Amino acid sequence: AAVGGFVGALRVLCEVGGKELLMFVDSNGLSCAHLAAVGGHVEAIRMLFDVGGKELLLKLSNDGQSCLHAAALGGFVEVLRLLLDVGGKELALTRMKDGQSCAHILALSGRVEALR
View 1 (cartoon, rainbow, N blue to C red):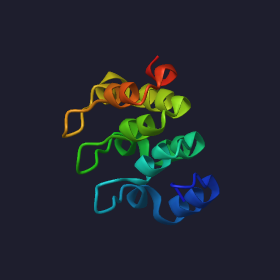
View 2 (cartoon, rainbow, N blue to C red; view 1 turned 30 degrees about the vertical axis):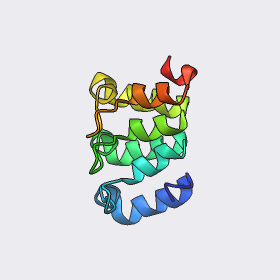
View 3 (tube, helix red, strand yellow; view 1 turned 120 degrees about the horizontal axis):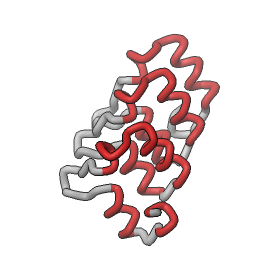
């Protein structure tokens, strides 16, 4: 549901499993919020934040990837703004285990608008 940004399906899953369900991660440590962010699904991120809170959006994968890193991969400006509003400087300065920040990812892909 998160990968496709299916907010209705996410809502049903939240009703059934609540925050506990949202906090599950896959074998790579990716949460549903990572999956929604990498697809640029801003409404799904908003809904996940409403249920899972800041804790969900600040989760890091096994390689240190945040939701902000995931959104940076696609250059999704609206998702980046929302995540920065929630996570602030702490999230913006998070580096993956390989040392990459979100700014590195955006600069390497030439996403000037997202860097602003």
